Amino acid sequence: MFSKRLYLLFIMPFFMAMTFSAPFRTDSLYSKWIIDSRMGDFRNKAKTERFLTPYNASNTATWDYVPGLVAKAILKAWEQYKDEPWSTYYFIGIQNYADNITMKLGDSNIDDLNAAKIFFELYRGALDKGQKAKAQKYKADATFCRNKLKYDHTRIQSPLPGAGGFWHKSRYVNQMWLDGLYMGAAFYAEWQGNFGTELSETDNRQSWNDIALQFDTIFHYTWNPIKKLNYHAWSAEPLNKASSFWADPVTGKSQEFWGRGVGWFFAALIDVLEYMPANHPARTRLVEYTNKVADGLATRQDKSGCWYQLLQYDSSMKGTSCNVSNYLESSASSMFTYAYFKGIRLGILNKNKYFSTAVKAYRGLIKKFVVEEPNGKIKLIQSCESAGLSSKRKGDANYYLCGNDVAVHNDTEGKVLGPFIMASLEYEKAVTQSTNTKKAKRKCFLFWR
Image (cartoon, rainbow, N blue to C red; front, side, top):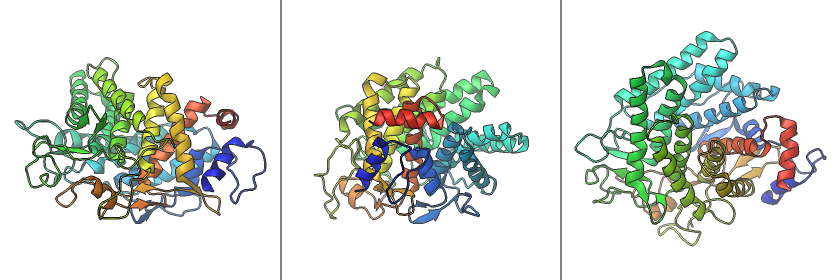
């Protein structure tokens, strides 16, 4: 019922009076609809987080990679639609978050850096608004986080393989996870793209070499050329007590191809290539990695347009210690959709080869995971709440379906909200080729027919 209702919203004329329980947004943009619905009410696992909105007097969002992911996506929406009056509160709400939050950077915890990605849009926005002191504060905060990663973060040391790679967290000794490339390397690259030219040519070149090293390492040790997928994680020291429960004792690889893990990695590749200099010698390699990931994922796309929690299986795979079958998962599907559309837009991925994959994916997101509520808001369902690897988390198929910390979340968890906003923004760019709302309505209607 919900799927059919939302599909009909696209194929009916946009200016007709709607008779559904919640009227269709007059702008017809899902990026706007979901932000208006959930900016002040989304989940970080079981916790409710909110940013300041016209209907929320305050924000309660914490410094964490999940609110940071959502905040970054909202700022992307503001930049894309900043000429529209309705986008104003997006910037105000996230600026309020940044101005009233204390950065909490743990000991070599790469997740803690993701929230710092908001400082780039805030810096540009503050300059545009004549808020020079605030702009400099945002730049200083971003630089502090970049330097903490570059100079202070624990790395794998020689003679271990992968020397120079960032540990995922201090307690995950000599481990690199796909997730970390999105949290750390992508932030590092965005800083270099925005502020790196202010440094010496030598420093800037070394930093890009450092960023490329992270991708070279993780791709080399996690890529399966037969499956055309990346394992979730790798340990340079698989027999240590932090890794021995889940890592292959010889290769150090984890066991499975987890959807959101690959989503973090695919999105990180695209985001880094957005800023990597065209003449950097590693760029060709990273483009090659991106196309290999895109090719492997395209072959795993379900007929619905979405992807499964465990990428190498369909719904016939079932947990051995619970009654949960492998399921179409919304956060990974949203990340893949975002990466395909953005990769095509930037010329990293071939449009003729992947545009239909991206469009099918976006349609799938709407049909499978967007639910319209009686109050006119929408929510997102069917996301994996959490997953990881440790001395108690084996990382086999049963874990990703039945683990104590792995649950299916049906109330707009932030790890799907952020990617869904970003996927919607990229879709809206791809289909409309304009940020003009009225043009978006007309062209979107023609496309969806």
